[in-house]
Amino acid sequence: MKLATFHVDIQGDAVVDDATVKQDDGGSGGVLRPSRICQLAIISTTFWALVFLVRYYSSMQLRRRRPVQLVDVLHSSFVQRHSRPWPGAASLVGYGAAATGKEDDRGVTTAAADDDRCAGRYIYMYDLPARFNDDLFRDCSKLDLWIDMCPYVVNRGMGEELGVEGGAFSDRGWYATSQFMLDVIFHDRMKHGYECLTDDPALAAAVYVPFYASVDGGRYSWNSSFLRDALALDLGEWLARRPEWQASGGRDHFMVAGRTAADFIRKGDDDWGTKLLRHAFVQNMTVLVLESVSWVQTINVAVPYPTYFHPETAADVAAWQEKVRGAERKWLFSFAGAPRPGTVRAEIIQQCGASSRCSLYNCGVAGANCHSPGAVMRLMESSTFCLQPRGDSLTRRSTFDTILAGCIPVFFHPGSAYTQYTLHLPKDPESWSVLIMHTDITAGNVSIEETLSKIPPEKVKAMREEVIRLIPKVVYADPRSRRVDFKDAFDVAVEAVIDRVAKWRRNTSAGPEH
Ligand SMILES: *[C@@H]1O[C@H](CO)[C@@H](O)[C@H](O)[C@H]1NC(C)=O
Ligand SMILES: *[C@@H]1O[C@H](CO)[C@@H](O)[C@H](O)[C@H]1NC(C)=O
Ligand SMILES: *[C@@H]1O[C@H](CO)[C@@H](O)[C@H](O)[C@H]1NC(C)=O
Image (tube, rainbow, N blue to C red; front, top):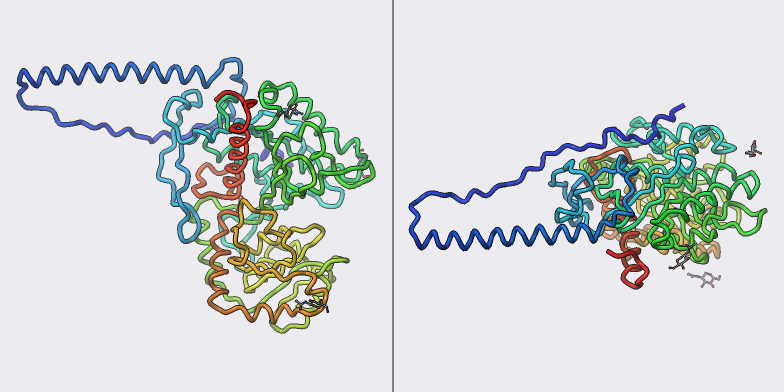
């Protein structure tokens, strides 16, 4: 099996040093007069006094910021640090300017000494025992009772590479990604692409726990509740013994559980899912999920579902944006999905089927294969609006496929996106999407076609441009890459976690000294 793809790559962490320090050689020469010599003596004394002061000060800083008892040398082999400037303000196409900085291979141990673009952004990542992550893939065929997950596990959770598929995709960065692989993608993105990892917990702005909570949660869905909870409880015990945990009660810790929170809030033994978000030890942490709930104590924050696109560079993103901007959209609207009893989908399928301007891809009928990424993406790329009614839960992965396709999403419930992805999506929903309340559809007095065709063309164009601008922020860049030069969904999420922890530190004296 493809296990090898998952094994931590300890070699290869060195990065090229092409940073050069520009020396200013103020031109010398000319005759020295006595007054000049005097001046020079004063300047020279002052200079050396300053050098001494600066050195003394930085050695004090180092001592203060790096308490020896917390340094865990075991981790140093996993740590890498790229000094890379944060991508700047979004350009018109919505991604940061290409990075101009140089990478360096100075070890983490010297990281605190230079004046430091990672200041306040360091992440300490636990080196968890493999049973909490990599080992979960030892028998990937048993991860799901119904689906063979092995093809989705390869390429560090991106799945198998997709061909161009009749023009649905571009030739770079497209993979058949399962929506439940975010734990893995995130972990590898952190390992290879995050430029501010540290091996010093005392320096860290936040602590990342690379537990594959969603992979673990999925594999025993149909077994006893004891089995479903066992590994997470094991993790709780492991964490409780760590000094990093004891220093904060876990408040600066975060992890990714790449499913909807509904899968992690089981109450009774006979109910669905695990109890992850109800365990006492998780309640101080931040957990990133695909769809959050507000009624558990644990902070759970929604981040985008992983899609098929994992670009490496801003140029890959720009090329794709250009393609969907120019796509010919012959359908006013379309819907790809299956009926779900008790939802607005029956009316949607009925309205779409009855309209000559709607293309329906009914996954509920024989022969339709909605797991075919190419067919669904092609449909969205040829539609102006894409209907996104709720499915089994309020949100859908399809919403993010829609954004990739440059198709304007039409929601039927504010909880399908606006109240969920507040970190990643614009504050003003009308700038990039349409909301038609599901109650108006089921009451039978709103025509989707009429509503959409009344939107003026220039408004449609502006909305589409806004959707296209969102693409870099909702994709997860190739987790294997060390040269990602735009701000992706991962970057946005990490930044938010760090902000949250920083707020907590400011509001409490319980935070570790910084
Ligand atoms: C979990 O349930 C499945 C299906 O009933 C079964 O095949 C499997 O052996 C069970 N796993 C364990 C560890 O009990
Ligand atoms: C959560 O944090 C509080 C203090 O902020 C602490 O008293 C409590 O013990 C922590 N919980 C766990 C499980 O560590
Ligand atoms: C739709 O019809 C229902 C009852 O028939 C009415 O209460 C509601 O206000 C109508 N909604 C709109 C948007 O016209």
